Image (cartoon, rainbow, N blue to C red; front, side, top):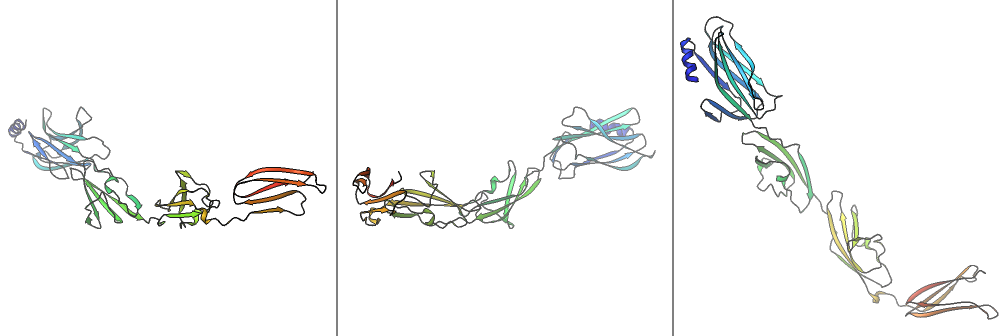
Length: 340
């Protein structure tokens, strides 16, 4: 087509120079007069240098990849009658056009009877990477941060730096700071994002504790570890302990203490019973009050389990109250109503 066009132009004593210019880098491919280029800019500049007169005009036509037919978007005409060298430039603003590729072609009209289509150029747009907003990540001391999971970088070339220095292992950083990511696509378009990494202090409860107590006494778990400024949770065998300050049952109790930032430490309290820690039992019987007006209280303390019988008589020796109980070792209190 170019050869026939050149021949026809020569017959009309016409000489034409055409240039299709793309602002970012050069064309990547040229085959049989067809140009293909990947580009992330949304501003296409078409420039032409022609020798033209008043009967010749140049029409710029455009076709989106979503369209079937070309549309004329600009016509360049000459104001003078004589042949002259003229420079034309047309900028196609594509900011509101969403298409993966666009094809341009130039049409030359000579008077009313002759038209020529020149070579076309197809521009394929590669979207600029969009990493999104910067990130802030905080983990507990002793852990690492995986920077590579913070942004989607599929098919992109990534470069992580900290203070201008390359990050050797972005999947496991252990130093606090502002990490910069530059992600580049295969067209050279790039986006930049930051990750602010910080490491929170972890509580330190110290070593586990072992506590022995008297068989019938209790122990206070809340006094075993310092949990000031922390949120403590006590459990035993996975079940929450509702009253950790009063513990009778021997077992292994677990404490998880959590700081404001979410970092936590775990400790165990092993509670056992030891009868040797119990004070010696003195067998006694205590009756109160005296005199009595309402209920009589009788407290019986025995070293070993025994049968306890309470008998009350009046001044005449008549039995007015009798009660027998099987008492366990230790102390037990009985209440005797004295009102008629």
